[in-house]
Length: 368
Image (spheres, rainbow, N blue to C red):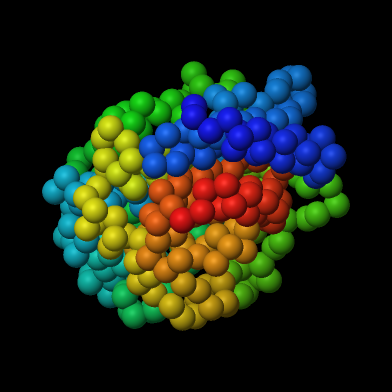
């Protein structure tokens, strides 16, 4: 690891956050043009077991996993296993019900498929039942004609993408994650949708932020319909064994250095580049700007990724891409600077204060 100054600066920052600030445990990895320049940990992974955070600690990272899932899809297109214009119903005929027959893989990656909500009474047990969720979504009535509007698919993204991949290739998304992405990159044990049972002892225990309730969308609103009450991501949900071991795909568990390596692979800064330079340009380019029909905010979206920077650093359109998680985790890459960055935490809160501080620090250390 080649930048001792950066390692020291980031270590000081995370130590401050866990010792004097609000964080319980943190893990940060920064890869610059293929070189791991920061790999730091601080704090407690599991207070009940008296475990400190290590570089190998796995952290539940909620929607940060969506960026990993999108990466797998782009790699499969690169390999010729899929095409962006593949009609979902051509490989998953049941999905054509109620006018969804024109939905494409591109719509799924772009959150324009029009199926952003599971059934109203969906439980956590339902989320852990892949076949049940896929049957429900195949029979769902779309909120809009596929491809005509944008709305964040909080839970349904993973099932739509995963089942399309499974039907089209005969292999589940988790198999392809290991076969085409994490295996070649040497981080197969570090990035997961469902955690293998043998690795559960490595998972950090998530803790709710004291006095800071997880925001709950108003019942009956689009966001409230997209996240049924029982499925709201919380520390309790994140610590459930069935959630951790299930391929929900819209959520996942990972180490900072593992997911940073995935983004470095997308940038082409690994021994095994994951995509071509042209595809990298395509996936990072902003593809939508306008209202989010689910979250009720204006949004900008790249091709399966968000250009959002957690530190308030202005994102460079077409350069920055990644994904943040609702528990404050984040992973992103920047083409211009050659950076791949990941921040994992186990203080479950929907702020990105820790990730933001790291982002601002790293940008100063490695300007584009």
